Length: 274
View (tube, rainbow, N blue to C red):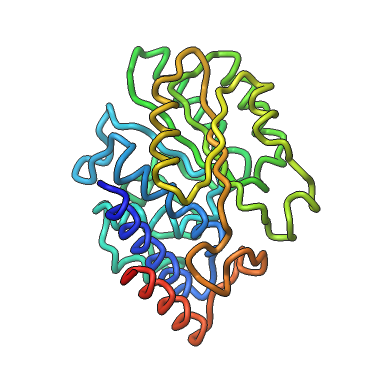
């Protein structure tokens, strides 16, 4: 896809996020929207995956470590063809396979159940090690939140990944600067994020996470990096694409009402036309 197609697709992913959370009357729109461009690039450009064969042995693996942003993950999977986009409206409903956090037993394309913060990266590291031990060439990607990396388990996993030189592993940090309680730098600052990953023997790339040229270049650089895992620190805007949600910590875990839903979808319709 060229950048224009990627932007259009990311806009559709954002519509899916807002629609899902609105219909659920609960969920996490802010961090889903900030990562929408990353989700889009992963599922429409980067990952070796096939919606018709979601469990194929040689597929690339993706673990959503910040599992509460499942609306973004589900919307990307649905738009990629893993399941019907209309099913996004069933998010968090009783009997729906689209739970509030990803469930690998029920959702096509989900490689790991996640949601307990800090644990997803550990699972991804295990997958990357497994590929190395088995001589398989699939790659493993995991997306973390910048608030999530306040968890100690993240750094245990990173220490192991760096020590084992897992160059088939790509860790992406969605650095939108906000968590449920406010600014990450006020709650428990993880800065400088890049220097921390470097200390654990990662190759580190800093990008603006809404620029597809930078996203593309970062993933290309990650593939070319040998002998160490890669961490992509993506500076993003929480709530990206919805005017009243942008840079607002209050939209970390809240659903829009009827009027807010209308405004959000109007914002996204205008962005699509543009």
